[in-house]
Length: 200
Image (cartoon, rainbow, N blue to C red):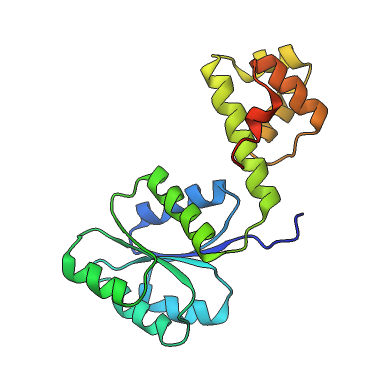
């Protein structure tokens, strides 16, 4: 593994659907995710474990705003992204007063969530496992290019001489591709190898 730690995220959200959405989205990026249904338990969880990022529901009646205040009483550095079902100027002001990094309205948009997380990682200098991030992003690019080319996994396997299982593992970011495997995939997909690494 790379010499940096995996990003550990706490999701404190009473809404099971939002909780599951965030967990799936962030786990796919290779992040460690812990979920709580009760925002009031978030401060104690933050005291006991090591998190770099918190998604905290501050909707009225959740206790999220109070939990944020409690967290800030002993940790003014941890990155908090506030979410809410009901956006209001008052809630936004209260949240920002406690130095929330961002304020997102539900229903959450997956692309927006990931953009905010990337911004937080960059702006706050959060440590993440770069190898995992690299594998996930390269896998995503292979999958996108394969879909654009209207190829099935089996068809791509036939073109490259690689197994369906290996290509699937690479696309999911669970396996790192060797340079020779990357070359075979790039040739079969009609792209230069640099396509997989641009802007990473």
